Length: 308
Image 1: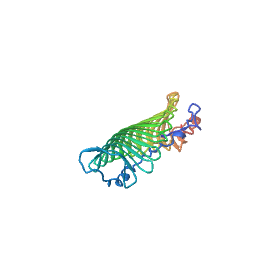
Image 2: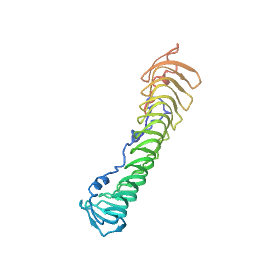
Image 3: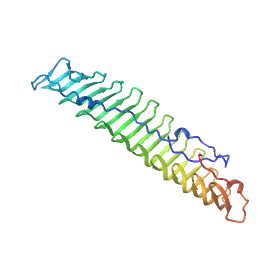
């Protein structure tokens, strides 16, 4: 569920590979929120009762659809407080206006899921909570049966999202917390990390920079728990383009990367501070641009930072 980057299994002993496979891609799941309430309502608005315009309370009335309503009426319309139960086991209890759910109310689905909160014109509008029997839950703002505004979405495994929604999807600033403690805080578009954001993995790896459609993409900085750092360009979670990679012992490589491997011309700084220029192809050293072709070749013969 996150962006992963580099490996050095074939290069240095001080750079240990770290497995992020469990976070390979963000879980794009959404709570399965149901919206069949208004369909039921279309079948209900045909019952006739008293002709008076004063609010009255009737005994249980069976409607043509088979639903049974017990509550307040004004004329022939449900108005005030009442309970409506359908033959399939679903139920609405709360406030009504002009035959529509309007105000505070709770709708229970046949499988036990429910929404409780504010209603307007038969739709979930305002603040409310959707609770699934499987453990999924949303608390926050709604507009026309969709999450819109600030809300908190949680799942049965402990993962959660806190942030903004638009028309039922994650959109704007928000924080996603995985059940292993990994976090992402930043911008979202269409349920994906997109724009500026930072992520911290459970193994201590940190990334801060640009995202594109759920990938680390653009300019960014990544730090590993062993002290290695990279500053530069990314593409689809890989070091790609110009960048500077530094080891914790002071050595560094500066130059072009492709698929998290040095590719093209670059400069290395050795332990003693000496700089050397060379050329690499997919992490393999081709040559040094000086007369000492064998000096330090064993240390920079292969630079493979993938899956670090």
